[in-house]
Image 1 (cartoon, protein in one colour):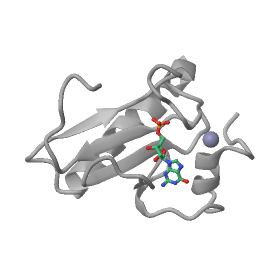
Image 2 (spheres, rainbow, N blue to C red; image 1 turned 90 degrees about the vertical axis):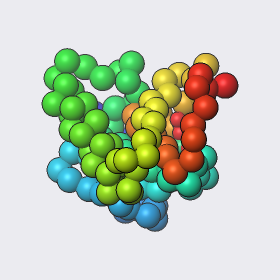
Image 3 (cartoon, rainbow, N blue to C red; image 1 turned 180 degrees about the vertical axis):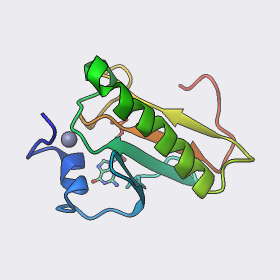
Length: 117
Ligand code: 5GP
Ligand code: ZN
């Protein structure tokens, strides 16, 4: 399935829900998280509806590569290239995944503790 009528992030891709978009290409869309957890907090999503990393299929490999490169581009565009940043993909309940459309969190602009809580 390439789009889900009821999916929040598919609605953002279709501009049915407003968001602050910072990057877009044929494969990916990046927009600011509505509840930022760091000075910079951007979500990078595939335009294709993939529920989560556990649902990505071998045929999605090019999309996954584009997603990571888009996340790096966003980080650089946000001025995080020198100071550093973190990319996070939450999958499933224990990781706290709350939106069932694959997304990469780009976090930066403050020191990020490791390991995460
Ligand atoms: P998760 O917890 O699934 O890894 O991350 C989902 C993220 O989506 C959360 O950080 C949450 O703040 C963000 N989010 C949820 N609803 C919206 C929305 O309508 N717009 C935007 N821009 N971000 C959202
Ligand atoms: Zn979706």
